[in-house]
Image (cartoon, rainbow, N blue to C red; front, top):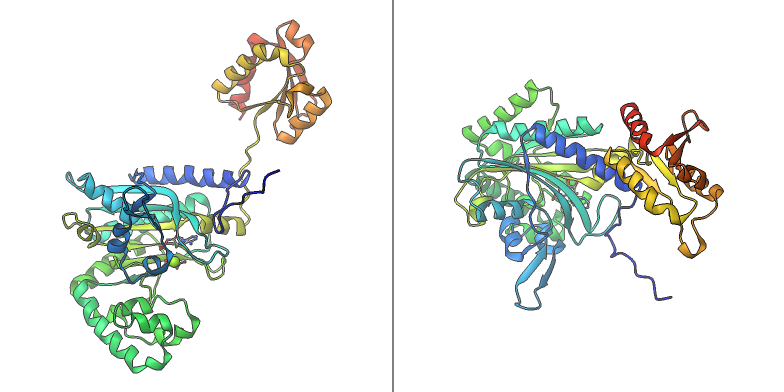
Length: 431
Ligand code: ATP
Ligand code: MG
């Protein structure tokens, strides 16, 4: 046998039955998005590297050390596996002039790639679901997006997430705060770690985003951006808060919440849990009014969030939410392969009615379909509620025997193949 190949470190296979959790989440997301009038967008997984360098900012964890970048071997183009999707969505919106007729509300789901140290809740290929509202400048859409996230938590039964909120103000306010921050950190230069020293003059705000516990006390006492906000920024912040309050959404204000990307302004927020250790942020977002211009579009405001699918599912699991049952409704027992031409159309008819049917199939067809006993064993293991027995006696008289495997176990009836649709309808209405 050849050497075994394994998945790339930090990149996971999502297997059944676990994949059922993913599908259930995706179904609920589609419904919640529909209810809030957000429409699906799908952008490529590979984008020009420049999109992220320009969009996310050069002095960010992602651009400095987490991107999977490579050169196209034919034309030398610099390309990157997307580490997040907002930049790609903005590129697509600009490229297709989508804001021509007014704002757009969009959502996406898909894999993202970051070269990080793999650990619980932190992978190299992970998945995000995101919502973006582009071309809307008012606080009501910031609030709408937060309410949308809360509606999703409710739909999927996620508990124990709290909301943290902050405002990063506008560029001139950030400049003033930046000057105050530099002065402050310079006064405490001996307490700065390597990352902070490097960022002191390039991006001091980012120092507040540090995950180094040794920096915590210093960061907590640093000048707060909220104290530098002007009247307009404060009004925007308060309007978001008023809508959240009116909707009974609890939150706390965290003046050190700055988020990992440079593109944010005004409202930023995170949904956090204490139940997943240090990888506790399940969803983060905020307003990014300057990104569209940065990427070459005509200036337009925007706001959005992204959630980490693995972390959300991990939290649901932690809460004890059961994985959805995906057993088939019926298992077809077929003693003789020669009967398959008459059996398979019946199975297709049932499937066409919405009844899920698993057909018995042997590992090695040279050895036949296997004994009735072994087929019944498989039927039981499949979790199906009914066995459909297409034995020689049944088939010679155009019949099938339906045997209950769970409720009313053992009960069986022999039906003509014409009646199987009636049985199917009765089952359907009972499901
Ligand atoms: P963190 O601070 O945990 O590194 P981040 O600020 O880099 O998160 P964002 O870029 O805001 O994360 O991405 C939004 C969400 O995507 C995060 O809140 C998290 O749930 C998820 N996420 C980010 N990076 C990873 C990863 N490497 N593996 C799994 N999920 C991730
Ligand atoms: Mg990160």
